[in-house]
Length: 530
Image 1 (cartoon, rainbow, N blue to C red):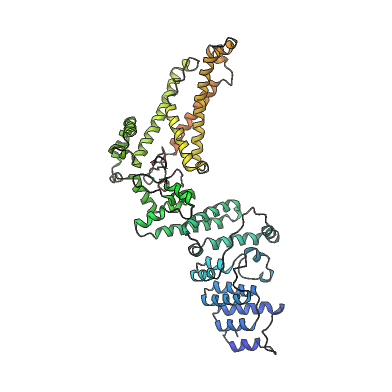
Image 2 (cartoon, rainbow, N blue to C red):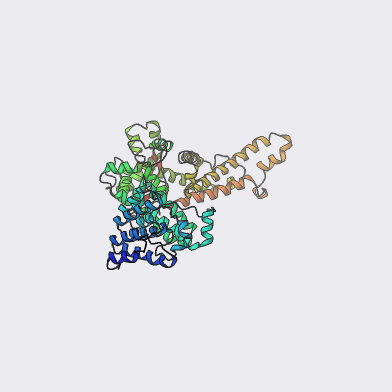
């Protein structure tokens, strides 16, 4: 009768002797539930209304019928069932959380996966009208608890059925990660997509057995953020989005506003946030890359179209004149030449030249130690013999201190290159400090009559008779290791026609500094997306 749409036949089956609404017993429960679901799938709204009026379905059966209506994309039927739920339970939120779906044995034979609610199903299918309707009725997707949660709900869920528990989490995240849910429920859909992508990436590591599912959802979030960026129609909209801070608090907003670059360069708060959240597709989008290129070249519009030979010639000239240019910038930073030196590409070349001079200094000191081995292997050397490189080390140390102050300790150490820098600088400073210790010991011990033995040890004893823990031994080892690590940074240079020079935003100095080259998608920040 339902397949044929015969309402009269359905009414005759529902008719009872006293005209009271038919109550369901256990034997009829599944039959009438399937009848209601079948009428919804066939689109027989009259038959559905007859069943709702003639049979007293409980809340869970109507809830499953609502899932069928959402699955078949019938907004009118969804509205009718929501009204029926209001009559049965009052205007309530979606009480079928993923934990309830786990323990509900009455619908174990349901075709829908554990944890699927009408809202999550509508979100997975991107049914915007139905999602809006459910959202207005107070339905929401409960956020899953942490993997390590030991609350009563999660503990019972794991003990009852571990597979159902895990599938419920995944289905819930499928709803949360959908375009429809992010667009309708989030005040800042792009920022929500960033954060959800980060959470899903962490979950893929904590639940490796479901890693493909979580990675697919993370990819979905990244694609959604890219689609939102691609909707920009002009440069004004691009600037507004990339400089937006989202729902950050006022203190963070003031802090990031102070980090804006000079010469009208925007702070790119949203773009820096995308790099921190590892949003590769977003940062690699052509719109972002165009912003990078415009900031990178500044007012040197002809730089990008210049020949490679001309660029190499300019780079070599900057390398030779680097000390003079730095002196001019220090004396007159507001001059025409000083403003030119602030352009990111020029500043990159200057700092790269400085780093190359630093390596040349290290190489020169190493060669001098080999040529004058007898002098350097004894106590005759002074602290200035092989400490010229400390001019750069002090500058590097001050630079890293400012970077920690600006970015914060946690964000700073998220980049492994910063960890390497800290280690190298620490060993440079330790090596220099040990040489200072030797010099001070010689000065003070030789003035004390009762310390003549130690004075002789630090002044006249041959190298073969030094102690294994001698400070000069340790200083030389530290210097050798740090020199090697300094040269290994050159291995990070990746030359390719499709790679652009990476430069790093330094908010306090309003500069772009790094001695490295990497992909364009990282070109403003000290993080590699590859």
